[in-house]
Length: 90
Image (cartoon, rainbow, N blue to C red):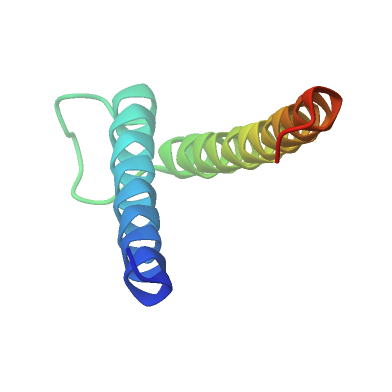
């Protein structure tokens, strides 16, 4: 696969993953903060605050997980390099 196509696929996958994360966050925060039966057409102050906090927490956890996964991936790559150097293969 040529590098340009690989880059396009990676970009498409990233957009897909972000859309999935957004949908999950929307569903989770809506379920947590907005009652199933609406009394008013506008969100109440309490619902707004709940949604703000929920989204902030969701994004913070998502960012932390991304950093940790990147860190673990780099550790795995380093370990693989060391193992390859130890066995004399590249």
